[in-house]
Length: 455
Image (cartoon, rainbow, N blue to C red):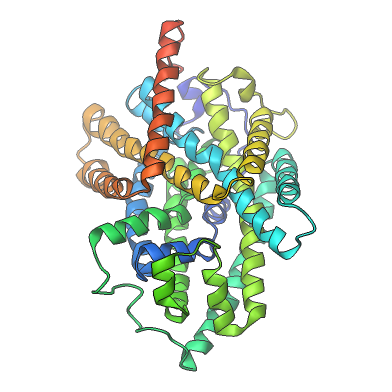
């Protein structure tokens, strides 16, 4: 079993997580009920083929998960795609991959806090959005500060609660379908000939894939995994597979019951209430309230809790290699967590979340940027697998080390191509800034380097 000492690092984080802990962490990061919050948007963009959008999203992420699993075996360290690209290709490439995925990891907590705070404000308007957001940030920061074991215990409880809510919805929706409330044919959510085009479906998949983001966060816990590195990769694949089953099932059922289908396709879902309206149609106002509150708590507490943990580990890994300010690499001696990185994520989430809450389409702007950063980093990940295993190691495992990464790369290119144009522009600017930062490090004599592997 490889250890981080072999790669020139000290073991500072606590190895206390097993396969089940990691899988649950990934499920919570993805949120089993994530489609509740973006159902209307995916429905509109996909022309009602919402289940198909999630299936294509699964295909894209499945190949990415396989590539993550391969690189986790080779380099069992925190840092995710930053580490894999840096050691699989070259340190400067690793910096750019880390910079790209920072756009995802740093913005994800802010997005989650904002969505949850807006939802809670709609139920308790006397408490402003910024106050809800601050409360979520403080609560999650305290839990993460107390250590990864505390985070793991909380995620188990939250996962059980989300699955109970999902089960209630599916049972009530099933009864509604049995009563003849279906608004369309049984297979329309997976294929509708009149509305099907590849551009439509891939555009919808680029939105739906937001629900799958999070399985990759498991890789940031590599130095807290107490088992063989292979178990880390398997936990990513298992979490992704379970989430996909839940996503496709709930969106298929909801799409059958969605009232006002034509209007939703034509006008979109700017208020984000399409799923809750469907729940009310299926079971009454109580089901609408239940699913809405569950979404708010899941996004604002459970999901953002693990997102903050993953982001702090990425910052820790980059700072440890002197590619971000060194203070972010400090580990709390008692709780064995990257304390300064955790606090930095909290501060950014609070400031950015409050600012975006003042913008008319703050949620939409953040969501589009999150997807671009992740997809770009995943593209580099696939290249890393080929370079490390096929080019350097002369591997003959053609499926895992060449064919699967190439297919995954091609699918992601199609998804990125069909993303929101504004996201492509802003994401491009972010990458240009990263290149400028990288160039500056060379000019001042601090080019990216990684500790030397020792045998």
